[in-house]
Length: 506
Image (cartoon, rainbow, N blue to C red; front, side, top):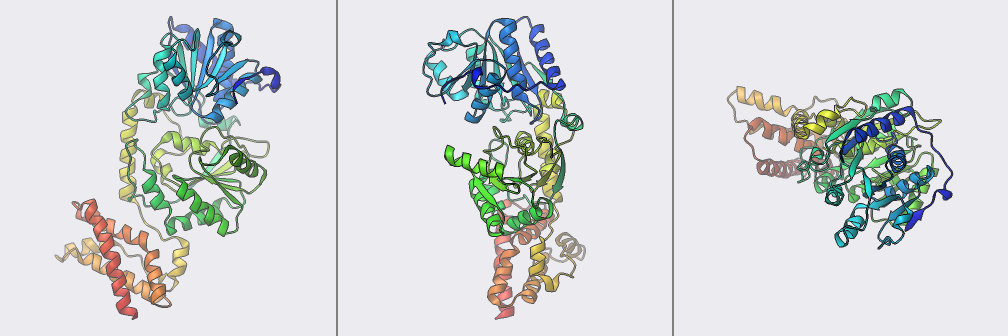
């Protein structure tokens, strides 16, 4: 994949939609108004055709200004797609990849498409590797890997394009590099006008208290993998699919490879047509997997982040977000994989298994991108507040399969740790007795539903999430309980429960 893709190889021409023409006019108006170079950020939802728009801008810029255009991408898939989009509208372009060391033919091309890391290496070796660049287009501009190249193009205008004008790094806001933001048509408008499919969202409450936040501001892969590998979470995923997406072509997004493989095994053992895909796959294996997914009507494809950009399969009918995220960009990228319209598809389903809707809002919600662009720190603070509220207000509900295992006690009222704690406190009794009461409640449930002692131990293991929930409610009641104390309490609770069950059954 080196060299150039000539327009003679492609004959397809995509007519611009009215909202795309409007966006192009707005962008050129901003460029023309500036007496010197300017850095402009353009926002348009995933599925709105950002590549089509900036390809047309490149074509018109070359014609109007008689200067060259450089388009930067961060992934190989986007590199090829962009080059093809340019060729389709008659823009001869040269791909700068790792095989292109020198540009002896630079006079033959007015447009280049380059990977950010490759070009950075070339420019560090030779600042004049690219000359006479009038416009630099930055695709997926929210990624900060592009920043290192800006110093080489201080005399060029910049056009960043993104679905979410919010930096992937909280400490490096986009407004440091772009002077203004142009907002394209919104998701509700594109749905109303028939350019995007509408979505029906189904949410399932999940206890996320065990998750850790990493330096990038999002949950760590390790803590997500530990949570989503639990039997209770696997059971909730399968039940949600069978309830809301059965028979639909489905994408499942996970936090890590380990979780995705478990999801693959879960659906395979349940008899469904499923494949797993991650970044370790070879190009050939990846192509085979995606071809299978494209050709199989009710296929399920489970993956990590590899399909959030550079992947377009309009026939997707359901998106399952089998993870939690604080990233608005990732949230919209995942959902956007299902938003494409076809002759037979105008609706798709979103299954949220990470409380993401409560944290980040519905996909179709209006978003004030101008406010987020100007004051990103305010946005991050709001997300933090919502997350804290979600953690505090979480109400545990047993999954259906667990109810089946505890059928003999299904009619009993749920144990309310907070109420028991408050009643004991009101009576002047030691609040610690609330833990004793909870252990006794669990002991009786296990004993009454177990066939034998070994079955009882298995039931205790299945109660892991419920035990943690009760212990953390108790810790919240204490107000000053540390995380280490909560973890100790969960471990101690489980050990005492197993001992109590043993005494009852042996």
